[in-house]
Amino acid sequence: MANATPDNTPNPVKPPKPHARLEKWIWILIYGGLFTVILGISTGRTDPALGWSMAVPGGLVTAVGLVLIYVRSRLNDK
Image 1 (cartoon, rainbow, N blue to C red):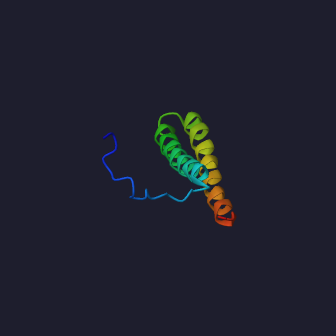
Image 2 (spheres, one colour; image 1 turned 120 degrees about the horizontal axis):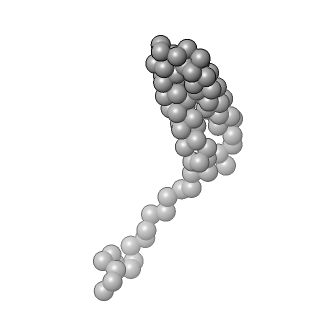
C-alpha cells in the first residue's frame, strides 16, 4: 500500500502559468536595481564617482523591470 490516497480520488491539476519566468525576472530586476541605487547613494557620500557608477546602472535596471511590467500586461494569456 504505497499510495495513501484511494485510487478513485482525482488529483487536482494546476493550470499552467505561461509567464511565470517573465514575472520572476521582472521582480528580480526591480528589487535588484533599487538595491543598487540605494547602495550607490550610500556610497556616493564618500566617493561620488563610485556612487554614480552604481546608482545609474541600478536605475536603468529598475527601468527595464518597469518596462517589462508593461510588456507583461500586453501579452496574451491564452
